[in-house]
Image 1: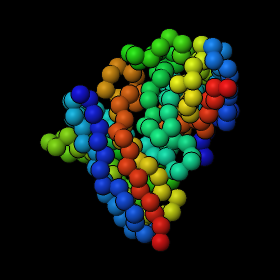
Image 2: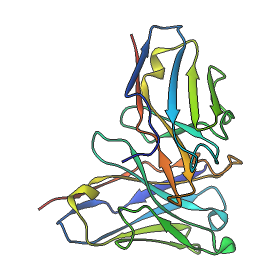
Image 3: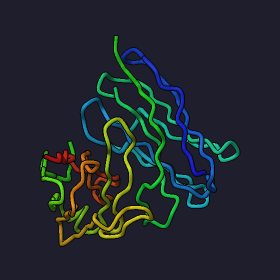
Image 4: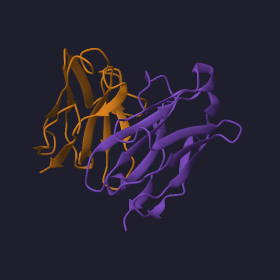
Length: 122
Length: 110
């Protein structure tokens, strides 16, 4: 079964850091371009950033609100995606989803994790 | 804030047809394909339409998408109670070098 499972969310103080992961199974993770999408409470979806496959350079792109504070990385040997969040702000409070395109969808995200909640509060 | 604009809400009675619009610009819808996602309450988003008008396996043909210039639309025909959800358009934006989602539309079945 194709699956993405996030883990590691939680409560953190403003200015703090948090790292969580997304475990992939059921598809060739090393070939996948992986993204993070977040959703603040009661708000819409917001793309956070992505990491390309190593075959395609392994480079990362980030949305403006998180650029310079968040780092996306991957460990293909463990089929795991990571999101390192630094200098956290209250507005980073959200459910964070990892997502990817597994089928031939032109890059549209057809596989999503269940989401992990991050709360930034003093 | 989002660069793709959708109406905040849409509604219809069972069996009716509902259409949701998505307005963008030359850097997103004008130069890239649009995708649509459905998010049921308390769940992760689900891909509904990709490449403007393609349905993933398992998505009923009651859902259809179209795009013209810098605008796109999603139509739900034969509206059913289980279609009550939030719907988001999305596309790559060449100027922002990022993926952008629409503001979202809440569909209510009356």
